[in-house]
Amino acid sequence: MAKKDLTAYSICSDARAMIKKAREDGVETVWDRLEEQEPQCGFCELGLSCRNCIMGPCRIDPFGNGPKRGVCGADADVIVARNFGRMVAAGAAAHSDHGRDLVETLHAVAQGQTTDYGVRDEAKLRRIAAEVGLEVEGKDVKAVAAALADQFYEDYGFKRGSMSFLGRVPAKRQEVWKKFGITPRGIDRDVVEMMHRTHMGVDNDAVSLCLHAARLSLADGWGGSMIATELSDILFGTPAPATAKVNLGVLKADHVNILVHGHSPIVSEMILAAVRDPGLIAKAKAAGAAGINLAGLCCTGNELLMRQGIPMAGNHLMTELAIVTGAVEVVVVDYQCIMPSLVTVAGCYHSRIVTTSPKAHFTGATHVEFDMHNARQKAIEVVELAIERFTARDQGRVDIPGEPVDIMTGFSNEAILTALGGSAGPLLDAIKAGQIRGAVAVVGCNNPKVKHDYQNSNLIRECIKRDLLVLVTGCVTVSAGKQGLLMPSAADLAGPGLSAVCKALGIPPVLHMGSCVDNSRIIQLCGMLANALGVDISDLPVAAAAPEWYSEKAATIGLYAVASGVFTVLGLAPPILGSKAVTDLAVSGLEGVVGATFAVEGDPVKAAELIDARVRAKRKALGLTP
Ligand code: BF8
Ligand code: SF4
Image (cartoon, rainbow, N blue to C red; front, side, top):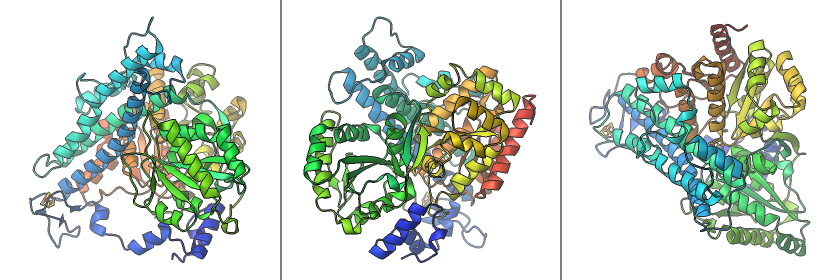
């Protein structure tokens, strides 16, 4: 068991209380396992180990005393670039395969193969279809949906030669991509090509590998992720501002508690429908509960929060701790970021982990497979299991820490434009006037290597102080929300310009824009602002940060942000430091290629200073006050 002082693990009181309870209950957590792993492999940390073939595994000595090349002759630069390329490919694959599930759902809706799902935002369906060049006049909703699904299917291959949403990319950015040969061609094609290039004996040039990594990341950001976002809005509704609650206090001791965890709204929306079913509520009451309570974790939680105002129980490092409350009957998961340990933690209580995707089985979990033809029925089965589990709950072991905090959510681009009176004009005016000096996307995960939520929330505080509007997605949403930063009252913590704008509009200085695939909303917004000013995205006073990132998906997001022209600060170094060539490219060389770079800075004040310097330089170049 981890024995450091509780304050070392998290800034959150609910997390600390549950880490303490986990110790008392004999439950192992992510922090215990991290300690057990330490010291972690230095070769791997630097990206210098390779097991791409069985002449290996090989490793390069970073100090130059041992091997300088793998058995095949690959040097440090090639090994690091190959490893990073595969990391980015895995991240793009995860987002984009999630996007594909939404394309399949839209297709099934269009073909009348499911009645469980439907088009909730027909206006957006028609708007997007027209935007990507489809004929919509005089066509009924199913015909438009069928055509759009077919068009998006093609984005996964390379038949059309150009992806649907590249029209959203400013012309100057498209020229940059063309010049360096990094215009994405097809989501699956570019991911598969990275696997090909990184096989032994294919692409053996670090720069070439890194440029392809950039191309495939763009296939995710402007492709797979963007499709996931837009189709989720079409199928489940485009988010609009609303208020909700966050932290473990959203669990209710007298209710059946169900948590949704994972990423796709396809499952979580059905669970939401089932928990609202009067027959199931009556069953829960008959079992002695006051009702059924649904809350979210991680990104599928963000999906339900953005569209339905469903409360958020926690982010990545809160997932085990939510079960430790002893009050959770069922955690329903689909895929991504679900620690396999959850099954073990659930086994220490009466809780069950329910897996739903044929792609994501967990040994020891209860598998209730969802597909688009049976989803409603399967959701009912899951809720019935939760009610049955409630009868097995030991109330003596229940401890729900703290009171929930209010948050404001729902800032899709459509909602932001509406709040601004219909166009980006007022936002641009505020930027030009220096009231809002720039915008920063603070996104990504938690990582047990750093104090939970500390870097995420403090970087946000530092940015808003400097009159930088902050946009959040993913697990940072919960970090910010728990600190009260997602409420209009947080305007008091912002600099005078940002504060005044927020107060005039009644919005928080930190806008919640969704899940991690919804980072596509942020790059789309950047594209809109650049187009309105007639400049490239790299000319805008904007930046991104992933202060506590852990996942391959976050690496992909960081790279598509940079390749789109957005300076990006990572709180933890990616495993590239073993190659001087790759590291130099990441932190300086890319400036001359895509007009933006990465920086690595774990200290939130210093990270904010780096971002501030970037914003200053960009404002100056645009002829604006710093
Ligand atoms: O896609 S922020 S820990 S939950 S990877 Fe995962 Fe990171 Fe959370 Fe969502 Ni994103
Ligand atoms: Fe070693 Fe080369 Fe095989 Fe990698 S690809 S394991 S460096 S021989």
